[in-house]
Length: 473
Image 1 (spheres, rainbow, N blue to C red):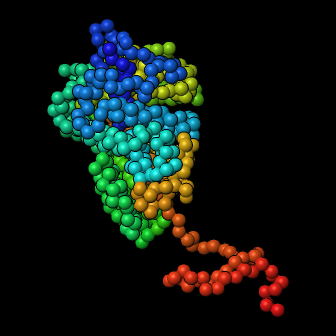
Image 2 (tube, helix red, strand yellow; image 1 turned 90 degrees about the vertical axis):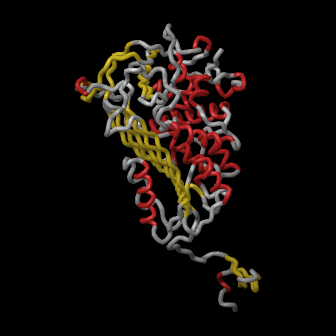
């Protein structure tokens, strides 16, 4: 008997590149393999079995074992971490939606999670605990083993001729032979940018190099802050095919910046079932505020994983590589806000468990969304407070002060051929330094002493507390 952790851990695993999916093949009765014994929870009230409570040693991972090739990390560790990543994904969604309830939002939870995992690797004490809890990270060293395995696994998605083929990708699907568009690309990159006079802890640099493939490149933030900022932005642009060009805004780094950590993700994939442009035409889209707008809708009819529970609908569109897909969730009419607020891993997993494979006649709008965020307030609201204060302990990294800001920028374009998406995250540190100008008036009682600086010997010491006797008479 399969436990529901199979489906949900795989769901979270596939979702990390911002195109989530589940690769179980429905059986002849329209049920996904093994789901007859799986507990589902569509309401999102948490009544379904919690994967974190499952004895994973007793759980089979038939699909994950086919897709997951790293020998370094146990499947139980991977399953728990990707579930945590998915939980953070939805926590962040609610925060961003609350900030702009009527705006389109796009972000890469994977990019944010990787960047802050690199930050967490050097955090200690309360600082580390708060990052771990906010980001839903594993406790202990398994976190970085898991992320390292994920990085390698996602990179393996680019390999041609994979022996694993998603059964929902048909034999007659588009073969992806297109001179302009690759069938599938998923690139991730990480880098450390310390100020050139800052020494980082060697073990920290080694960990990030081994698990995150993060190179180290010192920059002159003090002498050439603008050139340094532009250099980092240029690296991000190169890694994202120029989709993310200005991750670090003007003035975001200066002489008080001891360290910047960056992650960049680029995704470009063709649909297994591409839409015929001849079938694309205008239609009406009703916005969350009730207003109607004319948009271009792509249309086709094809057998795909689909579920409807309590009026909430799920449709899964596979990409050409066979391992990745986009899952579309359509809440019941007039129920969007309630559905979004209550959405959790088990709700999505439950919908996927219910998916059959009918002929789906679909209308999907073409869309492009670009978003940029400064996430410090959001992360503090979620519980990651100490990291952004002078009480932060990043001694595992070096003398780098505390987090000043976490910048995130993202882009997605969905059309008849497929999906292009890119995102980048930068964690910028700040250290204390003497301000350029201050005012001080010794107009109340004070102490003073004469200091021998080489020996730190107080040669004379005094106090001044009586303003009526300052002339010594």
